[in-house]
Image (cartoon, rainbow, N blue to C red; front, side, top):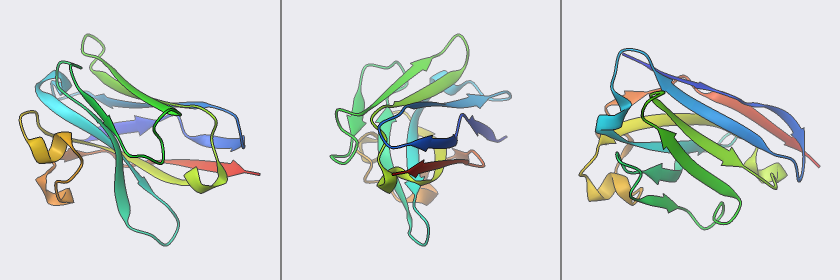
Length: 128
């Protein structure tokens, strides 16, 4: 089972993109889903996570106020709306699904191996 992340592209600073994370053989509604950003030459870092019933959402400071995570459990998809993109947002974005009751996952403090499923990643390039 693998998640499918899509929606990346090349944009100018200040523009927007919406990423999607879909699953075809997994009920995403049973999981918390997080988005991760891996900048060139750097480690993968969690930037936002949403609870299984969308009753909780968490953002790191660098994206707070610019990015919005949401989910549509009917479409089995989690979204990341990215507004006012900056060059430092450039990188590959991954989605990961993990146990919905893990406080570590819901606060983006869990190690990567705690996530049960991953997508292949989608590239975002933001030019100034």
